[in-house]
Length: 243
Image (cartoon, rainbow, N blue to C red; front, side):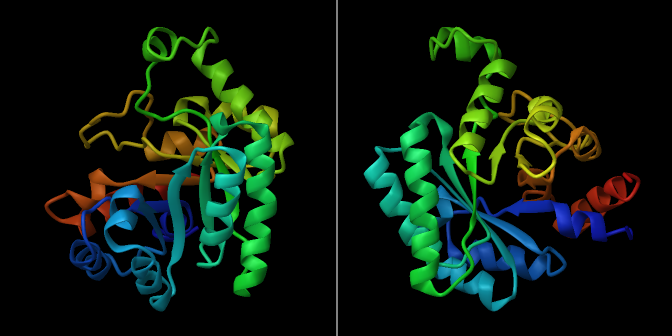
């Protein structure tokens, strides 16, 4: 791939900003970015209007709302979200198998009602801000962290979901076990020159791709940089070395 092609296809830039004005400023600064993530903060602020802005610019959308509720409520949320024509949509695997199955069916129903292509439904295995110690002592989960993430991904796969979100440190094991057709999305990716922030289980962009990630979600190293365009170019150059 060319110098920027790998990044354009694989890097999802997180629009973790508080309002439409800030989001549009980033879009204008980074016109070369194809994939954008809209999460809870921006969606709560702007609602679907930001999705309309992205679609008007022919961008691909990762709607990362991490639905986590009873099956009926999750299904309703996925049915509504699918009508927006987004590309990726997230739900917590911890919602349980019944909710995951309901979400899958509802997403297809909503897309059909909206006359759009169904989103790829992606399960959250475990937030990348959670450490091994927190999993054991705060959440009282007796499994080792890699085992827990794998069990959540396998349950999602069995329920018919298209992929999972995991930290870069679990992606190699999930790729080996879940196969090549299961999408793996990795947040918590940090270049060596960026602040690690609140991420507990991180790798560099190149390391994450080599380990088996399909998509990398990168926010603050790009969006809070003094020159976001320069940060994007540095990541593109790093990924251009990955075959």
